[in-house]
Length: 131
Image (cartoon, rainbow, N blue to C red; front, top):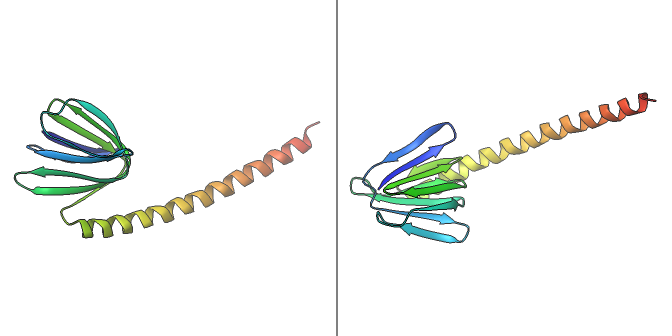
């Protein structure tokens, strides 16, 4: 199989000669071999594992996304992905990256709350001035 992992703004990974893939959905994990029927699956955040003769088993931490298998082509489209061959190191990297993203999300929510509060107060003042 040929595996392609796509991020919103770039191709994260292209691997030919993938012998098997294991992906996670909300219902659990499932495996794919080259002659599996075509399918589409909504991926849950977790680990996508695949194996090639050259690299052995490789793990990719993925955010939620979609997996599409057509023939021998498997395309995975996710928001974020990080690869590694050592699960412990990958876990530490994911924790560090997601903690940074969580902090950015909190900052963004604070800014959005301030903008919303300012907008609502201006709207209230405008309504008071109208007859």
